[in-house]
Length: 99
Image (cartoon, rainbow, N blue to C red; front, side, top):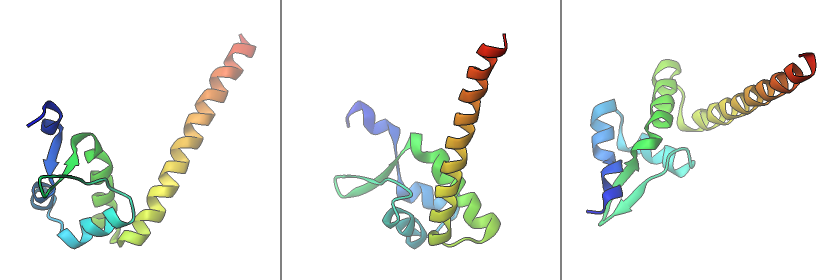
């Protein structure tokens, strides 16, 4: 195993830990909401992608959203994050002129 292989979690482990079906996870992959890495015919997800996967699973279970609705929600949340970053940047620039 390479050193970066330790940063990967088998998708089977994700299924079991979060109590999700493989078909649901496959739908997320097909909609490009999650990234799956294949090594020696085994599928893995990067550890640094887990927060995004957890967010999608929570949205799915809390609001009973299907994969297509999750794609829309993820896109909107990404837009909101971008707008929040822009507001913070503009506030910091404005502060320079106020001081």
